[in-house]
Amino acid sequence: MAAGAVGSALVPVASALLANGEAERARRLVATIANLMILALIPLAVVVWIAAPSIVAVILPTDDPGQLDTRILLTRVMLLSPILLAVGAVMTAGLNSLGVFGAPAMAPNVYNIGIIVCALALTPFIGISALAVGVVVVRRASS
Image (cartoon, rainbow, N blue to C red; front, side, top):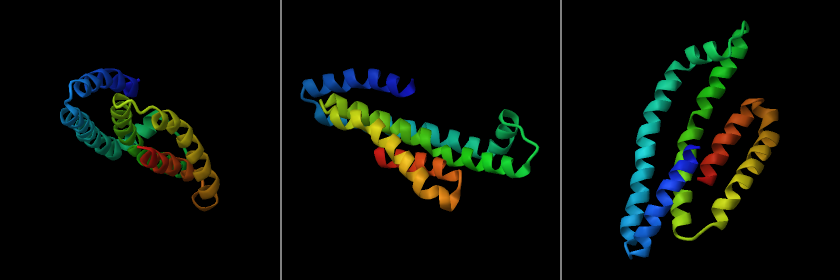
């Protein structure tokens, strides 16, 4: 929902700027929004990283300490994904403002295929963590 909200708010404004010949101003707008998203989400991710043991213990309780440690690790790895998703949403909106639709439309497919490839390639080496690593690595590559 957040990605859709960013797109529906940013595309009309950036498109209007571009239509008025203010390409530099449109570029600055997209860059500023991307930077603000990063500045807002990184501190939030740090707080969740620190609080992960408490949060995970409440949301996904278990008697097995090994399972709890795995859940905490996976939660921490996945904290990068929302940051990269937000930046990707802003970049998609920027491309859509320029009339570029192909690459942003294909990105979700490439993302899913990349996660599957990472899962298949990395699971023998790092187990279940391969999925979390795949999500973050592929999200980074598609942003």
